[in-house]
Image (cartoon, rainbow, N blue to C red; front, side, top):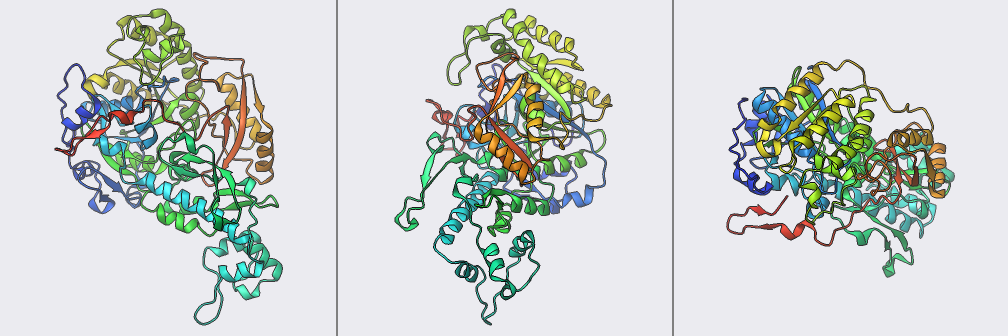
Length: 623
């Protein structure tokens, strides 16, 4: 075992996740950092069990060779989730604590929406968890709060600018934007030169601008109907899906309809996940498009003068958070975009740091949200795939699975017919993933109620579909020991990877062509666009955003747009309701069907179980 790994004492039946997490005293995070050869100058402590790894570490290790990169995805899940995070953590515990490999787990920070809503947290489960589990699932180091603050600062800047432009002349606006100094001279602040350059104005002194240039510079003339930027909060609140703002008497009748999204759907979250450096993040935040002028020109955060302030709010959030698994292997937690709304992967900078720290022969294991139709399609390298018997029974025609209600007997007793029928979903996920030119390892996440015949049926179906290997795992019940065979299979798959990654579509084709290529991978026969979607595609093409990749916002519960269509549906028409652009992040995202960017709470949310033991200060009831 490595220097920092610990031996777990497992018990049966498996206790509640929070009870397991609370039963293990985490190692001091400096011990985890030391095992990765991180010097103290390259991380900042956030208490005893968390640290922010500074991007400066890349200056020292940037020239090192990378380790293997393994991506854990899933088949189409049930509403309860299928243990993808648990498999990710269990695999890493097996590689680090039992197979003596250098390994880093790279996972997303959970949103408080699911934590208090339907699914619960995302620290893994059973004896394969990230700890401290309560800190991981709640505030962590404040990154999502920083995103929320930055997002809402930009929202306030948009409406404030419209308000002030409505009551002032061009000259008055210009004079207030460029007030005189104590010496009586006006000057542009640094961020203003970005707008001047965009307008093609190369003058450096405000008094040199012509009246026409003053008007172009000072008046953004935002069309309120074109505003795509919404306020956010990290709570599931269905009543904020449509609101009216500007009802105060001072706002002089400037009411407009808008909505809240959940914080992890913010473009700033996507920027954090896709950025490569502080300088790159500054550029991306400034380029974010919030709407259009009445002339049809895109208006950016830098046009509003707020790009620098957004970066200041995000300056600490860009650093990944170092944590640990139950067995003491290192974890980098960073970014948390939803896969059904955004691209569903943890950050590029965390992956870059981890790949250098583990070095040749080491492993970085990350996860892609939901199934291969969503998270894996959006970002993958080497794909380690898993599934569960429960989900396959659902896809084979089993009764509806509803969070908060007891499972139907079909899911806790042997039913080979349902399992074999549901394997069509697994087969399509394997086929889709293999099309990228990577080896597919299927990890069958065994539940206590699964029978040997059911597990073997899944394994045989996976191998027949062309999987590199298929392994039955018990990491939920046994920790890393229950995923040792999976670790060996993944190592072999990595060592035998020979083909370069293949993409589903080239970037230089039309927006519709890219959407339709993805729809075809779902099994669709075609795509239907709403009138609004058609207008948006035409506008983004005209504005020069043609060459961006596509990030589909789609239900995670089916290959199609309809969550009720289980298995591997085909022949359907995929409806595109709207098309939006995250220019700073660098993608176009179509909204498929009734996909919402603000989830709602169920009748009985997870928060019913969550409380605190006032005598010990420990959180109880998290799952």
